Length: 314
Image 1: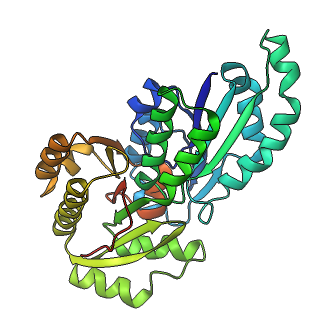
Image 2 (image 1 turned 180 degrees about the vertical axis):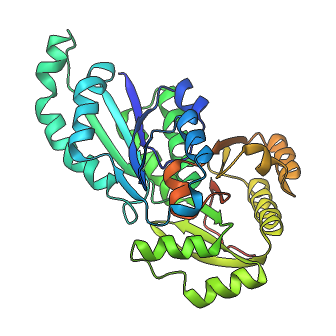
């Protein structure tokens, strides 16, 4: 059985991972002032966004995840012919409508695929499996990596979905923002009051940065640090300890809202790289999606891994 993988554009995985594994990307449309971007994880489009210097003007940007019709067109136009089953992994349903859109689209896809496959000379049914990664950005990557690994190991669609859902429950995504004022403004524009005016003002004045965590569909602060570089070091050292304790999926994902070399020059990165290498853990590094930069600000960093339940200590 030919099993494929589809993700939405806000799932931060490297472009070479997408291309190497034939992962389909469900795009997100981003509108900033008079500028329009198609966020489909294309590095050229991400670079175009950064080159436009729109980061400071993106608080009121509009984002439009793939609609029900868009998902139907993607699957009926291509996926039902290329695969016999597709596992769709989306960022947390509590933060984006894309998961619900895929679920709704699946009804029409499963109702209308047969004539398309028959015309292409393909027999047999087509299946869809939809997984809420219950995480965002780099935090969604471990479930995607595990789904790909299970497919390559010849597992059945049911086994792939069950394992991906389990990894989603065990995934931890951490974010270190660079600009608290931007984060607050963007959150308020979306009706999210989680970053108060007072805390953002104090944070900016004292250079205090929160460490935010996404886990099982919820996001919130789990620590605070002084200065972005120090925060990166704290987060890298924490991730190194989790790697040494053992991960459920042998990968650590990183996304950064800027040039990756900037992230690689942050304190603690080199040590983390060495520890991952010693443990046989692959580092999946990628520029943050346009959607991610619009929502959390340029220069922010996210980190994700899957592990046994534990208490975050910062």
